[in-house]
Image 1 (cartoon, helix red, strand yellow):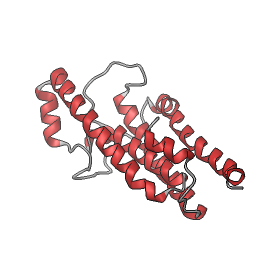
Image 2 (image 1 turned 90 degrees about the vertical axis):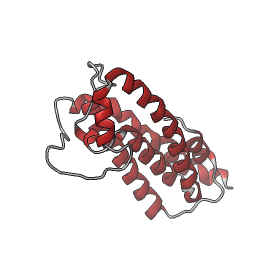
Image 3 (image 1 turned 45 degrees about the vertical axis):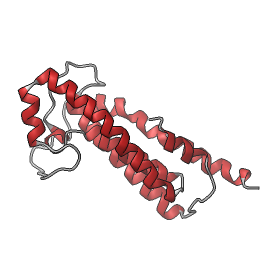
Length: 175
């Protein structure tokens, strides 16, 4: 995911909060949560798995309509924590919220055209971003698409590489 706030965070070193016992664990937890949510969603959506598309209402789509974008936001915020620019976290979060608000409005019109009343019923019963309810019954965390979803989404973990490189190079830059 190439987002301007993440590019800034990968290269900017002024104003860092050097608390590696907080920044890296919290950043990694958020990134792993985001990638896990994306893997779970991908098993049900199957978009990147090159399978026939249908209106997806299972797995995380039972609780929110946009789990991939929520997962992306968690990954972006987690990467910002890895950058050690804690003051930049609200900017990254705002970027994601604004970007995905526009994307979702476009997608909703498209899905309405594709699925009509079926999508309208789904849209009226499942919230866009934050679940109203959550049940551990039949989560569908693992199905026949698990391994393909893991392969498809594993590249998301590469987002940590620029921040590892930043940690390595930064002492030489600060001299």
